[in-house]
Length: 318
Ligand SMILES: Cc1cc2nc3c(=O)[nH]c(=O)nc-3n(C[C@H](O)[C@H](O)[C@H](O)COP(=O)(O)O)c2cc1C
Image: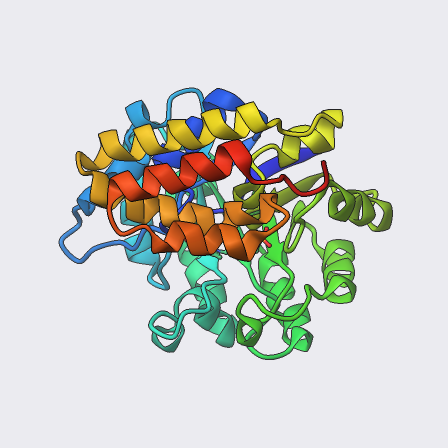
């Protein structure tokens, strides 16, 4: 099985990836949170930091691009290609109300014809037709109904995508409801390109259950599950659960990483609070943990609260 870390805007950025890679190193592919091509053809500082090779040493990183304009996609891919990237992922899943109405992210799924034109233009470019550069997609099953997917898949099947990563929900689900495993099964059966599963694999048991149903699927992407429990992939592979000491080291490394990246403890605290929103689930009393974290208004209060939790709160399932 190949394990991918899902892109999560504001969370699985380069600081997170580096800390994770150094401690666990068991992810086969990392994906950047989406990068939007800019009119002026320059990367925003934030996006540039995401892809700088020195910020991603030793990792297989795939930049994710959010656009519905093949020209802009090609321009950005070629520029990132000059930095050494060979593979790009197109975001066809973002459900945001600011993205979908523009026909991007999951909004692009609304018009399979335009999607086909997009791929035709990309694969007509020398770099992509000669397989010098590769393109994968990360897609939802549709906008409001998984019945939309067979038509969408017909389009994907016409092109040599390196993989089709399926977040098995529709846009209107956002992150609610359950992934549609029936629709995923149909997609996996009918895709001519390799398929990767994504959605709600939160525990080693979820993973095992999934592999029992889908023994032929050889790649899975996990996001929230790993942010909730950074030891999840290792636990799946070896059975060894993350220890309190490891969790403490991981959290301290993240704090150090954000402080260094932002040169500002307040910003580091805000980033850490987003991580703790997920990390709380490591504990028997997640809501109590979250309350303590949220109550902290200053970095020193935050560190005191986090360290108290890391030392004393009871870990779930131990
Ligand atoms: C806070 C947050 C930010 C996300 N940002 C992105 C993103 O930038 N690009 C993307 O393709 N998906 C993004 N996603 C979706 C995840 O990559 C993933 O598809 C989704 O969380 C389902 O997988 P999971 O259940 O393993 O978390 C985001 C999800 C969350 C919760």
